Length: 486
Ligand code: HEM
Image (tube, rainbow, N blue to C red; front, side, top):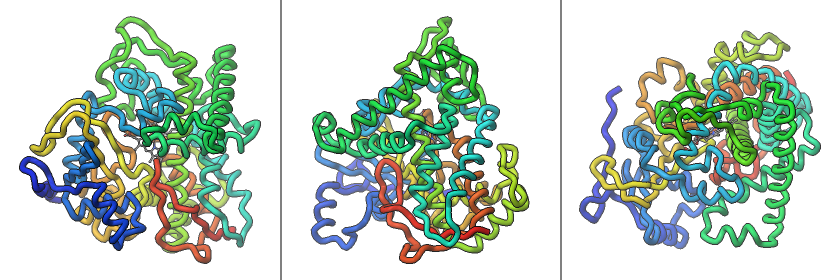
């Protein structure tokens, strides 16, 4: 495929790409626009169509650049270290998340990435295949044939059970609802973190903030208790916490991370002095555990929810997935990680779902040092955004972009598209550390569900789900599907 170059349209001022003053446009849209109900993800999609591949917004004194061409996105990811800081939401989220992988800056981030990396390598995550299968079979065994099930709640619970088992070897919590509520209150806080007065809101007696503080106390007590137990008996339990506790870093690049999920940029730099062996403090371990729970829970749950919805809407795709699952797994056997490579159609379905509904719908950074992209100056302090939602629906790479078609993800079809026309797991030094685990989780869960259940649209559920693009892209108000036992 010949890749068309970025379509960059000049703005009114020389040396600037095209783009609107965002506040003015938002206000006029609200007053006069026909797109009153357009959500931010769709807003970005229409901005790219209207202004091209490099769009410049102004919001008061702040400048935001939107990058919508794979080549520009490759430049953006390539410059991640040292040219970017975490975006404002991530910076302000440190109040509740601490300084884990998602929120930390360099050089701490690189050091943590080296320490945590081995926990996500292929040989280590293979053990989680059984966890995924067990938890999925247990979750779907609760469904009643011939009923309508609200899938988002189901998948949130499933993903929480999977991540808790993989991270802490926890099967039954003292109280699953306390865990759900703690994680939910964290997620609800993150969009608020964007507000300039978020600290005041956080300290206020508002019920949602009291719930947040209660959630924080619950998670802290649970995690610190588990850490103390493991320090007393450091036997490797095969979970992520054991790996994180026993991880050491001697400061030499690649010392604790040298496998297939290592990104090139993650090897650069070091937060520790060569020659001194470092491990994580309890506080750092707590921050990484909270980060993994949050990063690994809702993203996967959202992708699975949309996938089940799409399967219910597309009987032909569902039948093909069912046939593959029966062929590979037989009628009743629980899958293992060894089955994952043979479930290629199931992986294609998961991939196509994340094209249409990327759980992380936009990737943002703050510019730490002025640099150039495509000949334009991106000044220090500006925000840069690469919107997965818009790029994944660009007809230059995705003909008939709104059509759900897992055939787009055969090996042959993938080879025809430019890198970064699809990036559900981000890129650069911040690329999802658990991408391998997430692919296996999505694939095995979908194969089990499609083998054992027939899915069909629930009455009054629109084919195009309403979207709620908060920190992650969720279905607004949940998504219901009718389930019948096969
Ligand atoms: C379908 C599921 C998932 C998707 C779509 C996804 C997507 C992403 C994306 C786009 C990023 C980069 C964010 C950025 O550039 O700022 C990221 C980072 C991260 N993800 Fe995932 N993720 C998924 C599942 C998971 C799971 C299961 C875990 C853990 C068990 C996890 C842990 C993390 C962590 C720790 C980071 C921070 C990495 C760093 O900054 O070095 N993710 N994820």
